[in-house]
Image (cartoon, rainbow, N blue to C red; front, side):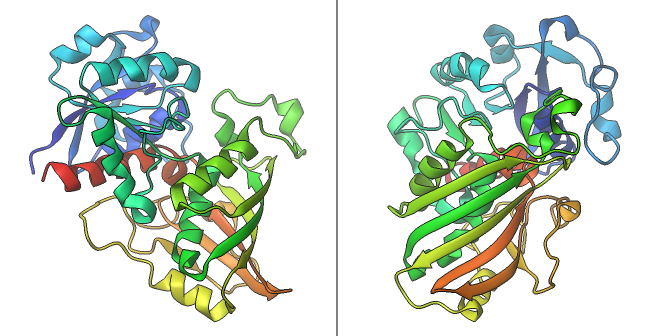
Length: 338
């Protein structure tokens, strides 16, 4: 297919960098409009970005010129599709305007995530939710599709294959990397050699989003902790099911978890990758997989007192961030445009 011209908003932030990295050689999307703050207009992306990802910046994006977010200029670029890495306070104003102007907006921000007609989409989990864009007026009008909060994403992916057993209760503790706080993020004196047992609104987001994404009424009991690792969110999970479930049933459900109905290039072959190694998974593997960072890793599986327990690892910037938005855009094109 001919590549779709796309815009990236908030391109110099840490989530924006993941957008630029993943789009640098994407088979479907061509990032032609790269937006940042007004003082950077016309400057080279490679000169203006403090690259934070654990690999070199792709050469192909270094010479791209930065623009300011201006609806008139954006409209002139013939760019129908917008990837938003904007902070939520900015997205709250900008994204409804983009939708009003007819753009297809794929957002990492939480600003519109809880609107009843806006999907919180994870294609392998709730592909059908994308059809909510019709309630926003598509195809006559633009729309917004959001991805879930980073910690919710990993949990939803790990639980989706287990939904058939009847999820009644979920207790989860998260151990979230500092990259989840953005850049410059937390002061070193706050997080260095420390763990902070509070992340504003994170636990509320997990409750609301998990119930909406999985369409369940289960009780959700989260605690969210910030820890001094760079990348990846680790989560310990206990689940109570309606049916009797053994660890072997869980492993089998994860192993056979597939979505074959649509073409989504960024969806990994192994959506959930389980290992029975005693010390698996660890934050250091968060960029493993193909595509890198899109697999959810699970381990430490056991059954106690009738509950199933396990540990999961999700890449908060890729699967739980920009990669989730790109995957949503791929799913949309597969459903409506191919």
